Image 1 (cartoon, one colour):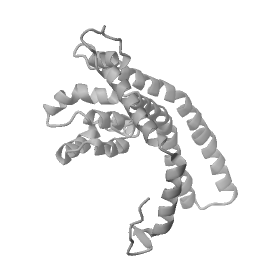
Image 2 (tube, one colour):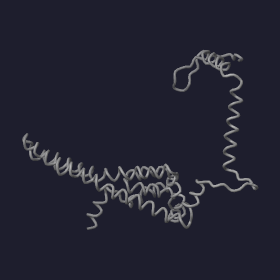
Image 3 (cartoon, helix red, strand yellow):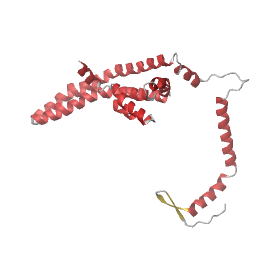
Image 4 (cartoon, helix red, strand yellow):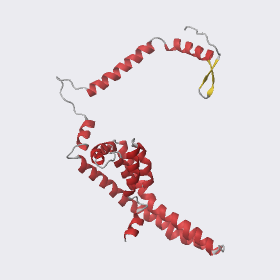
Length: 245
């Protein structure tokens, strides 16, 4: 290896401490002889092998029989003009049904534990130690009851909905939903990605607003943030029912 003249023995790299140039050159020299000449040949062979595999999957020759590709078949079904929307409605209905039905049982357990058992137990302790009535009301009837209601009502649906939502995202279905709804949202001046933030808003509206960061346009992002309030999360749903009645 040819030695190049260096003006400094130590070279600073960004905010990191200076690097000893002589040590780097010595390490490179030793690694060069350890790796050998076959390293570059093996690297090129692996690159060409990967490229051939990609081309073999992506390219269909005229004299070759069309192959069954599961990903493309699923794409054609879930993005179809005929089957795309019914499948989307059916799948999201299933997600909501699993969330609502599955959350009833743990919500009942938490309500029994925190409200029916925990609150009277704490009230008894408060009475035994002679806690002032105003402090008892503030801590137990105010802060504790409010926190217990939030945990028993909001935690179980969120613990079910968000894993299901993440599962759909990992399977690649949510980007296909955004693709299906893009034209519909564009007619109202919005973006198809807003469908993702609105769906997440049904689990938690704050998380839905945060999810609008995937929208590139500031104008469309602002529209998504404002209209995301129409997606009623489980925390606001009892309040909306109370106001409506």
